[in-house]
Length: 412
Image (tube, rainbow, N blue to C red; front, side):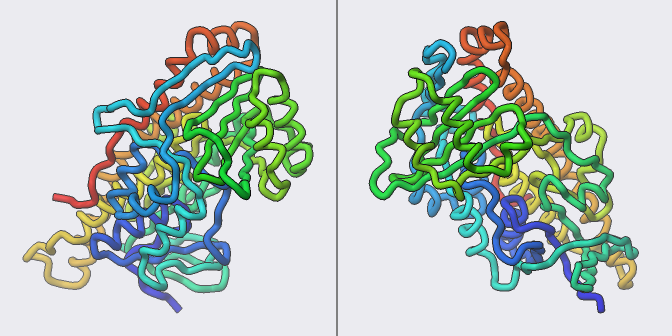
């Protein structure tokens, strides 16, 4: 049995839910397929920069999230090699697109805020896609339980291992040889940490600490990958404490790691898509496209992965609505002609989305990779260069890449 749908979105992550909510705000219904049995939260928190707040405001959930999370006013960077504070940057600067706004946001709260605004039944859990088939002007999406969905539009927001990206011809993302250890701790009373983004650089590692509310602190450490360590939270915790063990790291920072429960520590290898793949590859093809990590997996070095996914959702909803809500031309008489015309409009709408997101995605992936390469260098020359010459420039790049506005949902 085939089940007809207008728009199927694969993946109920940040990109999938934002796209669905953007479409809903414009009066268009979609179906979101999620392979797990509930909203899947990988990681604990993420930095939401100015560009992403504009996207959250566009879909109408920015203010509710602001009330639950602290705003950051500065970024402080310290070298654990020399003990010198290599950069101190205020976030109270004005960019081309208005005042900067930076907060660390709980991932679970973000996903729940997006999902809560969607009509009941929009998200279908335990729905794993196993294959995609062409059927005239439609795509047939086959699920593991035997269900076949016949859809006018297929959007892949299914993460770094995206089946939809593979269908479009993209290769699997490349491993960098680096890994990120992430942790989260909730203190019983006020954590006492200032509303600042604290970063520490050492030989072949970078670490950051971000308070997201009065009690909670999110932290991370990126370093060279170690297979033995990645499945053992005890080893991960010991490794992080060994890296932050010298006198240049304040005791209050070490206490955060020491107080983190083992089930609140995870490790994941860092992957990215080669920028030139986006230059030549199919971000969209026919009535299919990708967004979020399925489009632009990147290293976390400028904190823009989730932010870019929010941008994608707004732009995609706007472009797709512009195509679907257009009046049918008067000459279009028969059903076949109507289907053909709608298919062409969808194809053009997705091409418009791909054009808007191609260079932005290339810029973010490239910046993140280069920043990560420099920041995590362990050679004497690289370390000197990073700590004495590039520190302020690298800190400034964070704000520069965040100074972007994906626009409102409305289309002309």
